[in-house]
Image 1 (cartoon, helix red, strand yellow):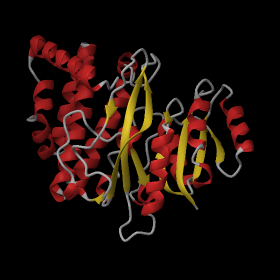
Image 2: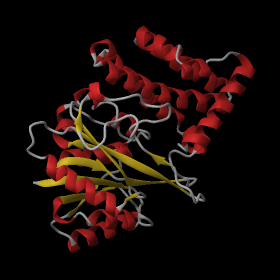
Image 3: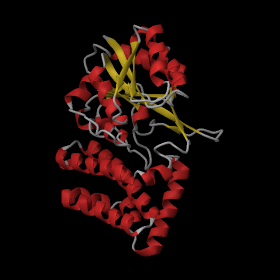
Length: 340
């Protein structure tokens, strides 16, 4: 059994997948790299075959019909042989020095008294055209270099949240919680780091800049214009998060876990709302209103907490002036947190 499985979803990734895979190969025989070719029409499959032939005990190519990012991640979870599981997008890469610390830590935690469910590390925004790169770190929110539980978690700042880039899950936990991401839908990474959380008991945080998140290409899913063109998919994921949280009943969860999930859902709902407000059409404004009404109908407790929070209030200011203030607030947040 491998220590960790890295799943690399690839769709027409020939231009950048080599950098990603080469950075992961440094892990040697402790790692399994699953290149999931999601119906590419370029040389992605050929490149994957070359890696598989050269590193047969480390790399495995999985060819499948196109189903989107979520489908590729689902395939990785199904096929993984590693004790731990991480997704690395094909245009991203990892830092060698931090990588070695990650592997040493995971090795040391196997077979201990407590089973590790989730390891968190920092990630770096490698944004096109910027010399200084923002680091998403968690040293003020999470205990460092020790096993901890939700009761030990401190306060997360606004805009500070655990993304797919910063998390490594125990593979069995992902299977046990029944995680299955929707196909042909973008933004499912939000579900990936949201739905497993009620099953997570033991965590570990390493204050190392492991994952390098490449951002800034105009065709990326997080680019504002692309998000607007795919707003229906953003709303779909947002509603699935609402459904899941309501089903889990936040009142029954650990208070700190529930607060974190509330805040994360608030951020995603803010992004959905602002995109719809910025589109500023009769249809988009109706969709923004309907999203909040959907939440209200699903669970009034969640609705009241999110609506009455700072982000909720800022998204629901009335009239054109209110929408203008919301847009300005969003632009400030985007500049600070660099999320697209």
